[in-house]
Amino acid sequence: MSFFTYRKGEMHAEGVALKTIAAQVGTPFYCYSAGALRAAMREFVDGMKGMNASVCYAMKANSNLAVIKLFGDMGAGADIVSVGEMRRALAAGIPAERIVYSGVGKKASELMAALEAGVGQVNVESSAELETLNAVAGQLGVKADITIRVNPDVDAKTHAKITTGKKGNKFGIDIDLARAAFAEAGKLRNLRVVGIAMHIGSQLEKLGPYRAAIRRVGKLIAQLRTDGHKIDRFDIGGGLGIVYKEEKPPSIADFLALVKKETEGLGCELTFEPGRRLVGEAGVLVGEVILVKPGVSKTFVIVDAAMNDLIRPTLYEAWHDILPVRQPRPDAATIRCDIVGPICESGDYLAQNRDLAPLSAGDLVMIRSAGAYGAVMASSYNSRPLAPEVMVDGTRFAVTRPRPSIEEMISAERLPSWMEPAKA
Ligand SMILES: *Cc1c(COP(=O)(O)O)cnc(C)c1O
Image 1 (cartoon, rainbow, N blue to C red):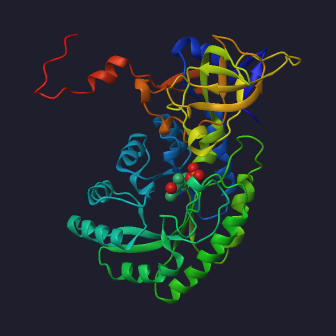
Image 2 (cartoon, rainbow, N blue to C red; image 1 turned 120 degrees about the vertical axis):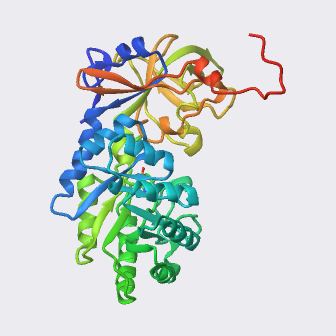
Image 3 (cartoon, helix red, strand yellow; image 1 turned 90 degrees about the vertical axis):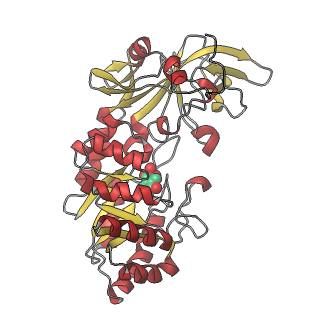
């Protein structure tokens, strides 16, 4: 079921017309459906029944406090990749022991902050990190619970920029070097090895790569146990894909059933780190048409949402569905157009070569499946304020991150003391 539908000719997020939000908060803005977020998390919760498993939401996909809190209230922990994310997770009420700290390059100061806060698990990705973490834990007089993230060398069959589990990616420790890394970890007094982790990529559209990776890691777990390590946890990572265009990603239930089957007999507690799958389809970006510029080969529809708001089309060649907020007549003719932003870059487009019913200045458009890696990757390039984020729940909506004013943006900066003050 979609939480974004036309009602009486107007696109709604649940029970709220997007044009109502636009009138109140201005454009562009991100809009998240609480119902859609809950439905996705519920699928995980239901599918994990009878499994010794939990979800640590990979909050880099969308780190809006309200989003994190919604998942936290449903029992999720958090998968973090920075101390900033840790602080957000804690601010959203996620208990420290339900936080997993991932990432390929953690600084000693960051590991220190994480151990001081009491995060539940650090997923270590290199022997250098083992040494640093051991030293930091020693300084604090604590023992750090760790897993080692291995790179199982499987092809996730996804976009090159978001594949992470193949030899030659910077992530994890090569599966062939894993036994040595575990041996090293076993000797470090301030570390407690609790398990093993993997994360093979993002926007996976098939279960095969998960099956292959779990089998490889499963074999390794057996070896590691023979070597005398306690491997009680298996962190499966995230990566389950969503629908942008015509993808048919596996259902969450099928994914969980596969993992259950493949991990049966391993006797490990499982952790899932979904990001995109929990938030991607639950969010949209709404912009307003500034002007329409007809060209010889195609028409440019210039909107007030741009690559600084949603970089996925230009960064990953991502395809996002674009719908007019006012429903076009079913028999409306279409024109071939590019939907572009006002930024001075040819890479500033949201969609190319789309056949859309004619749009004109002032019309609103909705960019679909923008809930993941949208707002979090936004910048203020061209001094464009970050787009606000709005959450809809039934017939209510709230601005969960307001648009900063230009004054706020400027006042965050300082002139060097040797310069004359600017004459206002
Ligand atoms: C990015 C990331 C995830 C989440 O990936 P999705 O594709 O958004 O599910 C999970 N775990 C780790 C370690 C990550 O880096």
